[in-house]
Length: 403
Image (cartoon, rainbow, N blue to C red):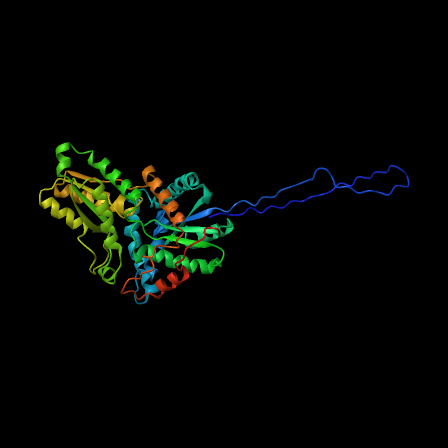
């Protein structure tokens, strides 16, 4: 994308009166030097909008986070949803507050996202000077900074070109899909329909930079074992589960998570046995399995002592890594006799991952596509009108990058 600078020049003349004789008429001549002033309007940044679910930054944010989550009809449609969301949030808040208290009093996801964004934009300015300057914005789905907050900041900055960069490597209607639907509604509320040229990075499950970053984290954790322990260690790739009704309507998430796992294992040389398992099931209905806790129990009974769990669908630490994997499953592993339970670190602000983020954005800008063609293919069983509305709002096209 290129932008034009607005230049204004004020040229003045100096009148020179020459009189060789009292009767000689006045003669006006242009000045030899022009007085010039230039006002330059600052080039608006190329915006990179980082979208995510978010998490309560403090314990006081827990209730509103839960209420907003269970009110989201893009991910669940319940009878009397407004009333039920209030009831569920009120009932679950005490236990969820306790979990967040265990990990320091709130979610660190905003802190990590800011760190990732700041490092990414600096690197982007270096590797993609033609689209510089770059500036990251954060749009969380259920807590501040909300989508409306990010859009207002972009409006104030005069943004003309924006890239929506989902922070979920693998696409799901429940995560990236919900964020994009809310973005469409937010753009309409903010009156920014025609002011900004948008494009979307809707998934990146097998990007080489992401694969490399994950593989490095696993290698570092495997290195903590002795050579003998390492040969027998099992790698459990754990991702947030989905209700089977979402899977059965055609959500691509399970397949894309599996693709990530396959690429990471290829990068590692397939030297260890591995499985893909699923965590964070909620409620009595059927969810995608096997559950991480069940897999842990099963391998413990089989005498497996060394297990590395890998958060393959999370790019930063939050309650699912710090509490569920570290506290809950860590305690279960110890009780079951797994003496070598380890958790690969989340990507957070790791330089390898930050470089991957910058590369993903640069490659996207160079393609000049509004989004991947895969995003425009709705789930075969989709019945959510908002999904089609959003796709109509962001039609597929080749961008000129000169907004």
